[in-house]
View 1 (cartoon, rainbow, N blue to C red):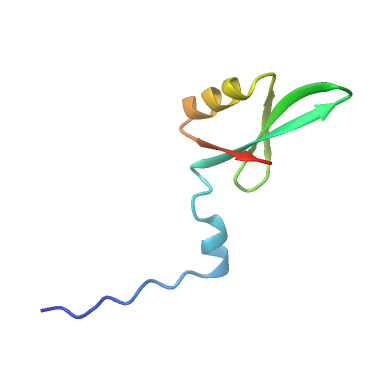
View 2: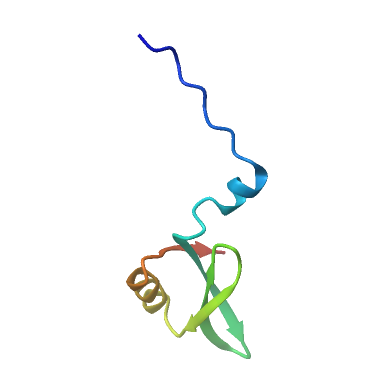
Length: 71
């Protein structure tokens, strides 16, 4: 019988990068009274902007990204 396994230790860099290739964030923005939604990669880099939240989520899913909301 095997004993309990020891959990893998992640470095701070590994932990920070975990999931970065799968997640994207959608944030509501208001520029001069015009509401839009900006999409950013998990590392914070800008991807695109959309007029509608649903369109942003749809486009991200089409690129194999899981959209998350930022408030």
